Image (tube, rainbow, N blue to C red; front, side):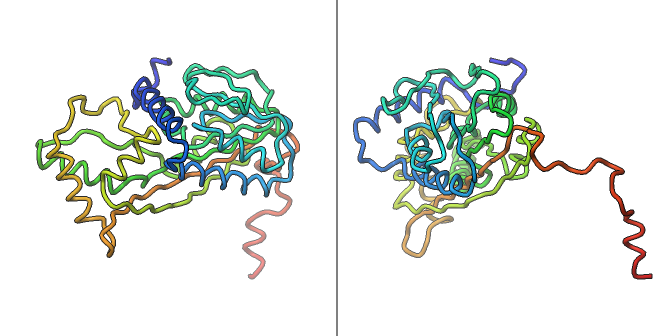
Length: 297
């Protein structure tokens, strides 16, 4: 672990929650709690359909399940597909998989043609360093594609929990991760040295019968509060009852269901290569801007 990197997340807790979610999913494979991940995997396949390339070697990093790798295979754009995960509970025999914590990941330089990652990057303490390593792991003109949770995700839950805690305890501790916005995500790609960086956002609203149903889905996905600065003592039942009441008062539809917002930011960038479109060098223009502006005089 790089001690100079701010420790926003308690990495040990992140992995504990992911392990619990994986064990529950294995016990109930028809549970359907991975519907957001399935949606992201479908989106990944659609995005690859517009890329006029075949990638001989694709890496799927920390995408929770085989859904991302399955999307790569279904796209017909990837040859060999391998996965890297942080826990053995997240491994299946369908794809060759290496176990390695994200913060310790070291990849050989210039080996992968395509690297993808779904709905994990937002839980990393050192996203800039991770992206930098991925860029160097790509062959020249290799592609990186990822989706992560962005600003606005679980905004209603954040507001309800903060208000309930402030009312009952006279203060507030962090409950929801500080997700990046689209501009910040694009800056991360540029900082890592990716060429032709592109970001876009997909907003999804999911409706639930109650706060407990939402929390159940978050636990099933390993999405509990793993922030390093979170309150360590358990909250009372009264706290959750008040939070549920606030949520219902402020964020329910005309059918009495509460809404939960998710904002998925998609990142894409290419490892630099001389064949890619390059910006013109300063001073290389053949016609001056002054001359163009004066054409109407």
